Image 1 (cartoon, helix red, strand yellow):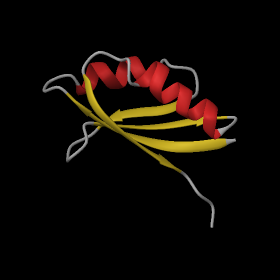
Image 2 (spheres, one colour):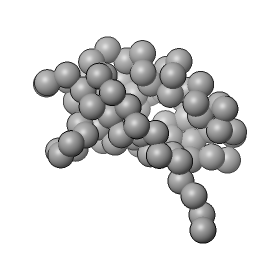
Image 3 (cartoon, rainbow, N blue to C red):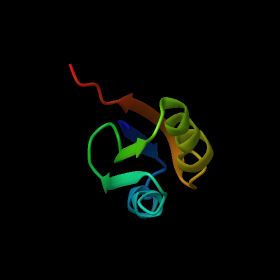
Image 4 (cartoon, one colour):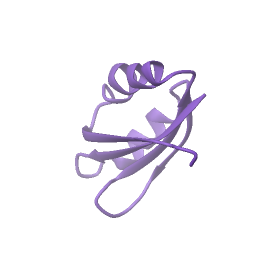
Length: 77
């Protein structure tokens, strides 16, 4: 199992809608709208890194109102 945080920038005024929409995507554990340089932070999981990448590109980045994403895989040191 691979987990990651996905940091998302949105168009002005779209953070709540984006977080709500993303929270319904399979594999998304949590989606919160926040303040700061990013507007939404998502915690997601998938069986493999490839599946995680496909989820981000094919599902998350297609949500209306997103302008940029940054995916940060969780590592256990």
